[in-house]
Length: 342
Ligand SMILES: Cc1ncc(C[n+]2csc(CCOP(=O)(O)OP(=O)(O)O)c2C)c(N)n1
Ligand code: SF4
Ligand SMILES: [Mg+2]
Image (tube, rainbow, N blue to C red; front, side):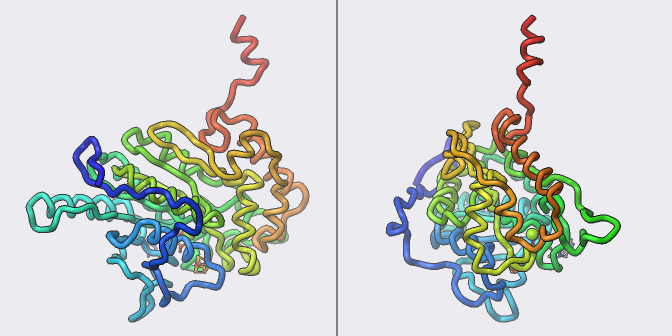
């Protein structure tokens, strides 16, 4: 048991050193009704496997609520509670504060209990952003908020969210004869936003379950550090992204290898890249974004011009951002720097 500086107990969850060291126990089992190849279901399973049995999971409305609690069935083995669509932050904070108060009053055995609240991109990056932001300022309460990002409001039939990629076909942005692209906004940078704007939050990470052990280890790190922490997971959704479910794993790898979704963690203000993103930062060439985009039906209407624009935006993130893929403050270009020096 580790005491944080503010006297709140967390569990020390050492990282799994390889797949063979991962515990066999499952806390998200059979009984869910998610689509074949649903990456978010895998994320739930890995998230709670990493956390272990002394965990309470709170989930905002969305596929991971509805498909996981169909009438009289549930895959959750640990205590689980549904919360309103925009309330994952409030549920995390309230539960953590409630546990702490009960323990302080001696009404519960004092022991570390992990509190994890998950939310979708609609619930977390759009509707519940304020509540998550508030929770990340309360350093005296331990909770992890995991945003599973399937890049749409999937549960209500794939509507566009602030995390939907540029140009994607959703039920709110169908390509037509007059306008080929309906959705022309670039996706929010939610992990960067949380990391840059919340000085009391000691840990923010991005994860991809195609790299399962690393993903679980980021969850374990967040829970060990304690205080309010945040993880953003990019989750493939065969229904919304329109691809053969067998490609879920490969598309996760391609999202990283093309540089579209960088893997990093920010611990006490220090950015650390990991996995294939680290190799890219150290000079490995990125794969062209078309290799990722053209495997998905939601980009089937793209023409060369659209692919070129997408590539250009990703290149910019790597070449011009102050912290590549993380913080979009622009680097001063060489000409301007020379002028300033005069
Ligand atoms: C306040 C409120 N507005 C709308 C809804 C309807 N609704 C239920 S799930 C959902 C989609 C949520 O999207 P997201 O958070 O991305 O989760 P996903 O379904 O993609 O897993 C919506 C709009 C609701 N439950 N509550
Ligand atoms: S619609 Fe997408 S997120 Fe929802 S259960 Fe199906 S694959 Fe999973
Ligand atoms: Mg979603």
